[in-house]
Length: 212
Image (cartoon, rainbow, N blue to C red):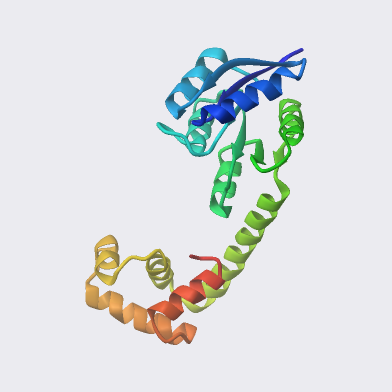
């Protein structure tokens, strides 16, 4: 039985390479190839392939948005991300939205073929380095969150996360519907509790704990 594929990448050279690769496999059948996200989700809806192989960065909709939409629509097609790079948060989000395979473009083509076969058979193939780094980040975040929760109030934790995300006092005040002076008081208390001497030190602390 053939494995029906939709392949998607905004670089024609990559698409051509994938087509040539998959044509060498007797049991792979390409039913559509796409260069943007909107075409890709349309092709998946139309052809209902077994697997869609797509880049994470594409015009229209990116790979994660496509995977999220497919999950919401309960489409049975399994998703494999083929990407040049993926940060830890993207790996975690990919796993959350049901992506079954992640392969880096730098890896040997035969690994992509192996990944597709495994995913088609109901398995999961997450490139080990990405999975390990993402898992380490989750564990660091959880440990950091527990440590900070023991020291700070829930409101102070909110402010730490916002400050670590780069929001200024005025923006934090607007989001929390409190006065800017109140934010400053909270920050002063946070600095004292965490034994840091200012905003930059707080950012470094939050980064070490995996919260930024």
